[in-house]
Image (tube, rainbow, N blue to C red; front, side):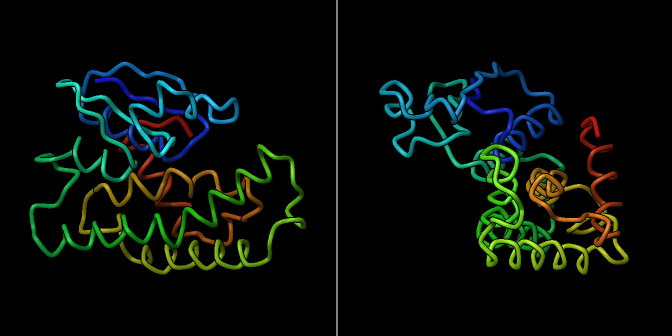
Length: 194
């Protein structure tokens, strides 16, 4: 398997972390989005959306979109709950992550860290919704170790990717103590350096 990803992207790292956690063999192909490497003719032939991550599976088929990729990689593993309700809750978090978390927390991070904007220059809606997303996570993690059930799932993998870097976007993780503790647990479970 080949994984095309940019190491600055949480969406790409969650694919890498899932593959690593599951012990899957892969070749990482660094694809710098800031240099337009996901917009070349060769890349667009593989993934017409021009986004990373993208993978070429062992059988040669391409697959894109981070959460689709991690679901495919983790099929049949302990990262996907066996219980139907818990599996649906995991999916609920995956959908929420892409619609209500990543567009705010990750966008703020990218604009501040990589585009050089001051936090005060961010669109207020991005900051407000990013704080709301972090509070939603903090509330959900009060009294439980992981987002779904009693063990690590793809919900945790997907959401830790940008949450652990939220400080780069001006968010104060100290304001979310349950999130901070959860980040540590997920990093330990995935063997991610803090």
